[in-house]
Structure formats: structure tokens, C-alpha cells
Amino acid sequence: MAIDASGVKIEDRPFDQVRQEAIDQLIMNYSHGIISAEAFERRLDVATDAKSHQELIDVVADLTLLPDHQYQQQRQRSFSPRYQSGNDTRNENMLCVLSSNQQRGQWLVPAEINIINVLGSVELDFTEAVFQHQHIVIRVNNWIGSLDILVPEQVNVVSNMFNIIGSTNNQAQSMGERQAPQIVIEGYSILGSLDVKLKQTMKEKFSSFANQFRQMFGFDKK
Image (cartoon, rainbow, N blue to C red; front, side):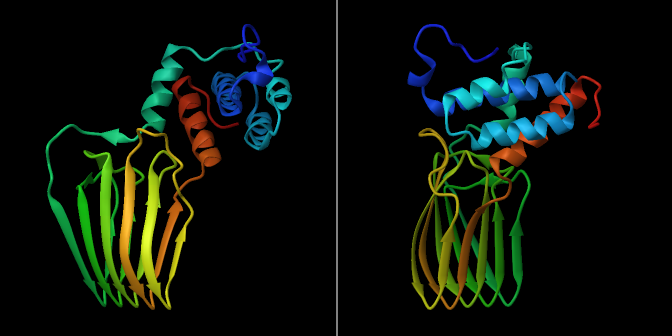
């Protein structure tokens, strides 16, 4: 099995690290056609919901194929934020009045984004965005408008909003690693709403990655 039981006792190892090893082995075996799609989804549910080391050991106990270098490289590309070196310190200003504004795809994220939203709708999707800075500030003036911010799990988000008969809902607080990009949202919202959410849960992303990796070896989703 892929979970290393030698050396440090398994129950003394960081639980999230052991969980990731179990998930990696599930994806590796599924992508090579060793277990079915149904078995993969069922075992992935167990691994993501596990509360003990033993559950993780058991879910991969009968699987012998280990993640290789190709797998690790592909996983790194799929689950790491996109970075581009550069000294771009520009600010981006967005004015939305009785209209809608969307930023999606592989857009270059500036160091600071200033948003004025009046009776409008703004969406910033960071799922495929390219980061040049580890620290990004979004300054918001929101009047009776809506602002949706979509992020992947490897990006940290901190909200310092002041609401007047408005609402702020941050479902993606500090979920990335210490070196991950950090987005700080500050400003005010009057009779408006700000929602920060994950576009795709980690379980959904693991399933998507597993199917993409599986296709590399000529297997369809059956």
C-alpha cells in the first residue's frame, strides 16, 4: 500500500498528509483502470470524510500501484496556483453602474483592484487566474449591488468588509498553504451583497483531475 507505515507510527503522522497519500493512490489506480469509476467515487467519499488513520489505511489496503513521478508532476500543475514572474504593480479600476462586469479565464491579477458597484453585478473568477503577487487587495464600494468572488482552494481569502444593511459571506477563508496567494477584501457594502465561494470543492477537483489523468492512459469514464 502507498501509505508508509514504516518509521514514525502511522497514528502520529499528520492526518491531512496521510489523507492526501490515500487519495493520490486512489487516483493512480483509477486512472490506470485498476478500479472502476463507481469504486473510485465510493472510496474517495471514504477518504475525504475519514476521521481516523485506520480508515485511510483500509481504503487503499488492496491497491498496489503507487503514484509515480509523472503523476506527481501532473498533480503539481493541476493543484498549484498559476504564477508569472514580473514587477507589474498596476492597479485595476472597475466601475459598474446598472450593469454587469465579469472577469474570468486566465487573466493577469494586478496587485490592487478597486471596484465601484452601483446597482450592478460584478463577478471575479480567480480559478484560472495568473498571479504575479502573493498579496492582492480588493477595495470595494458596493451600493445596492452584488459582488461574487470565485476562488480555488489553494488561495487564501480574508474579508474586512463593513456592511450597512448588507451581507458578506466568505466560504473560502484561509484554505491555502502559507505561501499561497492571499486576497484581502476591504471596503463597504450598503444594501448589497458580497459572496466569496469555491467554484469547485476539493473533492470535485480530485474527481475531475482523476478523469483527466485517466484519459491520458486511454481509458474513458466507464
